[in-house]
Length: 166
Image 1 (cartoon, one colour):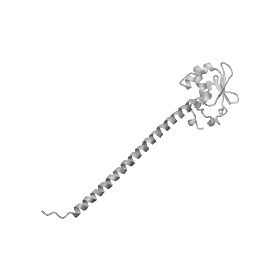
Image 2: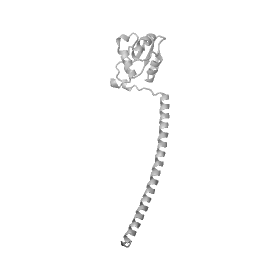
Image 3: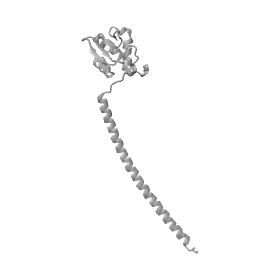
Image 4: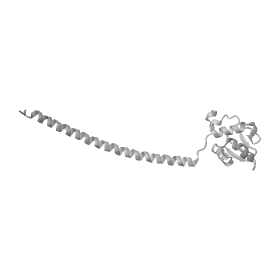
């Protein structure tokens, strides 16, 4: 996955882990397959504000969960997060997929259904308009035929009139 195509959250997490100043607060485990937050309180107060708009640790955890990370709490002060595709070499990072929120799915379905019903209603209205236009076209065609017939009759009358003498 190109760096520019990575989700912003993962870019920020990668930056946190690569910043040597943060190593005593957040780092990789020795195997390079888990993210360790060594000092949760310090992480909340010093690291989160640098990378995110909020210092709400539960929001950070929710984001990790949305990207498939599992939380292995070690103690009240330390925890580890694991995602099989998130490793120190970032070779399989392209396989990380953000989970969809069930509420987003419900909203998407609801929006889709509303749009579908609106389209069906609009289609019915268009079909009714087409039918009305077809009827008007038939009436206009009939009127044109009647006028043409009348015109032909009048033309015959004019042609067959004896010439008027003055």
